[in-house]
Image 1 (tube, rainbow, N blue to C red):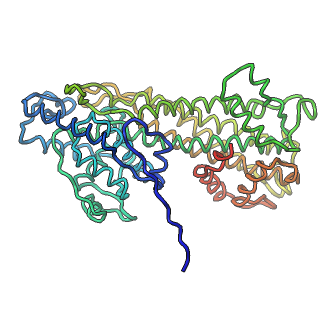
Image 2 (image 1 turned 90 degrees about the vertical axis):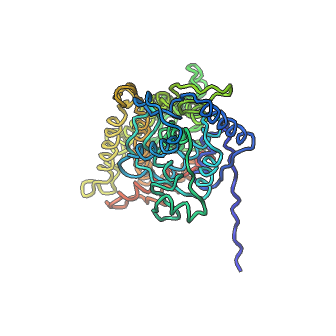
Image 3 (image 1 turned 30 degrees about the horizontal axis):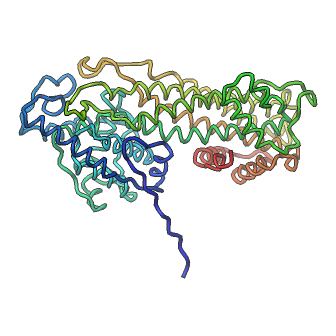
Length: 509
């Protein structure tokens, strides 16, 4: 018999107040399950009671016994309220494009469950518990990536999730794409029948843009750390001047992220015999090396800002109307995605800058007039092109990022017969930021390959700091130095995926 490791799952409490991106990542990765605290269950029941009290009192409440959007002035008969909610899901499930990755769908489900658990949405306990069970049993609705304008919530994406709760739509379960009804059945679950307001409560929120944004932010952290490491290896390859990273110098312009980057790089380069000090080889380096603390640090400032905005959003009630604790049901605009739209646009620029400055370091590595190294880091230049066209690829990616970085949030287009006359386009911004982050990972991968090749040509491995040498070994497990020209396309992509998924630098920074 062989000993088998039993993986103990963690449990993430969805209480509507304490969720963060790290907890979401654990659930997304299948390392944790979610549960609803008893206190929140009570809040959900009280909220539901408030809805039913208003209906029984014969009051007209938006989304409960009226139509939606421009149709809000049409009153719905009591015996048609349940049909109204089901109709809403069916009518709004009009997303198009490729399905969102499972990781993002799981993040969306966690975020929606957390918002509903706050007890301001009037959903039934049974409906919310089914959403929790779908997360834990890995029933993943198929959600097309396009179709949300980011106000009135992410209606189309969330409707595709909500349909599975009522046994409709499509879902993935254990690798099979099934009808919602069949997916629930295989997982040992039963569909629910929606009552007043529940359809609206399930789809009126910002969880698509926030779900994509949360997954993207976790990836951005890994890419930013890899950018700092790539810069460290490039400094060793080019014998960069470490003096510009001294804490006393940075203290006179005390943005804390400047020192965070510089201290991280100083730590990684500790003991290196490749870096130099001011005046030893040159007085100063080009900006792409000398200004790493300022440029990378500014991107980390943006990262921190976006994390704060997302943390607030993921612990917010974002539907409409809101069922207040005093019993009132009030229409407002919490579904509007503008805070996340602006945050995602900001993160787009920050992530693109990691790529922009990386591409300039790549140019310094491959250009013999700037590096003093073999042209394009070829072992036999002329006969071989070396990494000449790898720089072209990096240039292509950074130029594509510049197009994607155009702010989605400055656009708006009216919907629902001009009732909804300003929208955020936050989900577009979120999708774009993830694409930029993935492009940036590819640029960083190219810089790592180029710095690795430069160190190989200089026979400088034994002069590296221990931290950078250890990381270089991981790079070379994926892409060995070029002894002659060869196709490295797949290795660039593999290294980019390693950057996007690996947390080693976080543990060691």
